Amino acid sequence: MSFSIALSGIAAVTSGLDVISNNIANAGTLGYKSGRANYSSVYAGGEAVGAELGSITQSITDGGNTTATGGAMDVALSGRGFFTSKDSAGQTVFTRVGMFTVDKTGYVLDANGRRAQGYAATNGGALGAIGDILVPNGQIAAAATTKVSYVGNMSSDWTAPAVTPFDPTDSLSFNGSNVTLVHDSLGAQHTLTQYFVKGTGSTVNVHYTLDGAVVGGTQTLSFGTVGELLTPAAPVALTLGTPTGAQPLAVTVDYAGCSRSAGDATTTKNEADGYASGTLVGTSIDAKGQVIAKYSNGKSQTVATLAIATLPNEQALTAVGDTSWVANDATGAPLYFAAGQGMAGTLSTGRVEASNVDMTSELVSLMSSQRNYQANSKVLSAENEMMQALMQAL
Image (cartoon, rainbow, N blue to C red; front, side):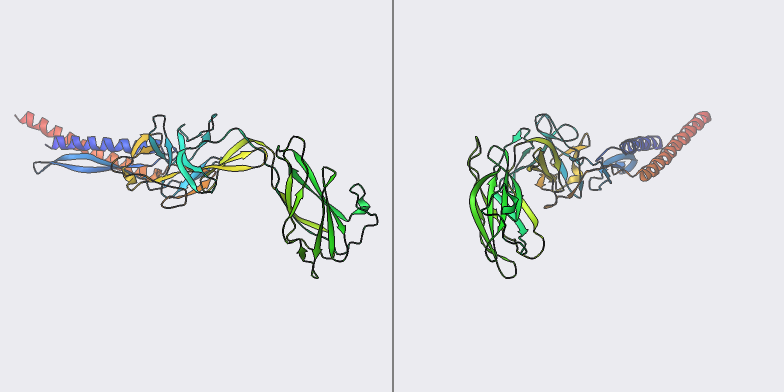
C-alpha cells in the first residue's frame, strides 16, 4: 500500500510541477494570470490511498504590473473586467491584453487578430449597440463655417481715421483689422477680414471683406462707460456671398466679451468652425476607452467605446490559450460596461498589463515540490529495500 501511496504522491507533485513550470515560462507573457496547484488526499473504503492534484486555481483577480509602451492603441485595465473580442468562429473571448491595431479594412483587432467589441458611437453621445469596432477609412466631408467668435479690445485711444470713407486698400482709413480663416461648403479656405473704424462717441464701426471683396455691410459696436460691450447683444448675421461652385456662405459673428479700454488694441479670441475635408491619419484610445479617429484636417471623431466585460464568477473562466478565456455555465453571463463605469475597472493609456507571476514565490514552490518529490522517492526506496530484505529472508 505504501508503494502505491508514494507513487500517487510523485504523480501529484509532477502535475504540480507542470503548473509551476507554466507560470515560470509565462513570467514575461502580457496579461498572463498565474495558476496554483491545489492538492487533495484520496481515500477508498475509509483508508488513505494517496494524494492527487485536486484543482488548479487561477489568480484572475490579481492584476499584474503595467508597462509603458507609448502606443496610441495600447491600454491597461486596472481593476475588474476583461477586454472583449470575437474570434473567426464568432465565439466571445476575454483577455487582459489591451494591445489593439486597425486592419486594412478598418476593423479594430486585439493582439491575437480577433475583432474587438465595443459600443457604437451615437449622435447624442450615449453608448450604442455592442459589436465589431469599425473605423471609417475614407475621407471626412468638409463643413462650411457658420460661426465666428471674436473677442478683443478696441482701444479708447483711437482717433478717427484721417482718410474717409473706409477703403480696405488704404490703411489710413481704418484703425485696426483682424483676419479669420473660414471654409465654404466644398472645404475651400477663404479670408474674412474685419476692419475696425473709430466712430462717434463710444462706438466702433466694423467693415468686412471676403478674399478682399467688401461684403456684409457695416456693423456698429457700442460700448458703455467702463468699456463694456452694449450692442449688439446677439451675434451678427453676415451674408458673405457664394464662392465658386459652393453653396452661399453665411456666418454669425459673436462679439460677446469685447471691450473698449485705453491702451493697445488686442485680440484674445479669434475662432471659426468649419473645416476642409480630411483623410484618416491615425487612431487612438483614450482613458475612457473611446476609439478616436484622427484626420488630416486636424479633426477627430469618436468611433466607438471599448466594451469591458465582468462576470459573476471570474475564477471559473476557461483558459483557451493566447492569454484568453471564455465563459461557461459556472461563470455566469457576462455584464458589459464602459471603462470606469459599473463594475468595470479603469484604463491607463499607452500601457499594457504584464504577467502577475511572482518569480520568488514560484521558485519557493519549486523547491518545496522538489523536497516532496524526494520524500516520496525515499518512501519508494525504503519500500524497495524492505521487499528485498523480505525476499532474502525467505
